[in-house]
Length: 404
Image (cartoon, rainbow, N blue to C red; front, side, top):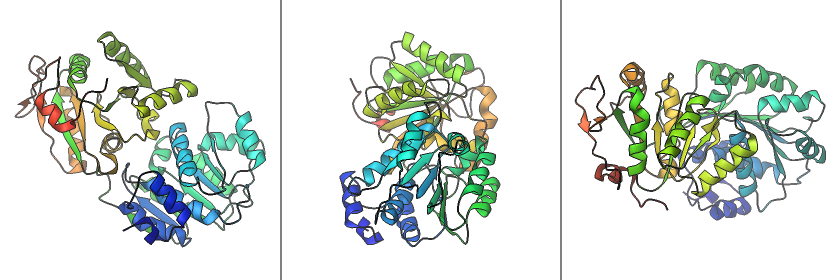
């Protein structure tokens, strides 16, 4: 099914082709016609399934006639990185149109954002906290608003933005189109949808809380104090492609990066304590392939949209099994294949059992000779790695040649 069959204008079809896409993903096939028809909708799909285009393309098409450079579409997102990602999508897909867009988020000065709002923009992508700051200063005019999107609503609520989102909703015109997108539809997301949407349609692609197809999940059992040594061994042996490593804390991310650099592995950290300019430089280096290894916390990694991530490593097993789904969704994007590797110590087996129960799959248990845990997993399979070159099994999973 070509994009033109969804009812998109030639300008948008051409922009999509410019980005290298030929056929819509399932979420795009279902959501775009509904959104073009002005319906309120809830879209449930995992990360990497093309949901940004599922709402951005209809927004651009509906706003294009008579662009007025006044706020007509508002997209709320949970993080700065996601705000930048969505803004880039607006500019890429709208390259043949005369619409303007701006991103509003914290961690940077308000003055450039204030000037952009004063000049007038058609589309604003914003995090709730910074948008409220501008609202309180009288910088935002919602009188012409036509469309609201709540993107990654589950993460927005997990981060405690529910009161801010409700305050923003109270300031918006009642007559508008509202679209809510979320990887998971929790009770809190349902409650938010009842407040924000009116007579909505639901689009659910795949089972909820299920990772994308194309991901191979592997557990490596190791004692907690030896995790960093095992990770270094794996990274020294891995084939080409970027690797994203998740830690539970900012301190843990910095400490791990310091260790990896001592081992000759050029790793970079990404978390909320980094300045926005530093975070952007790190993300740019990772997206371009200059940086191969990125160690991040969950919140900081929320806006990472990199097609070349071949391996996601859970250095710490998340306490919430749905966080696992969000993490591993960074790989195997747009139909590619990837590896989700979890380093698990004996005290984390119950957490991993919750993940397997949620996903409905039992993952292979492996150990690396010389790094056997004090409490062995059931029926472990040896994972043979060599420091100098990729192991056969790892090369088979990830593929490719190591980037120089």
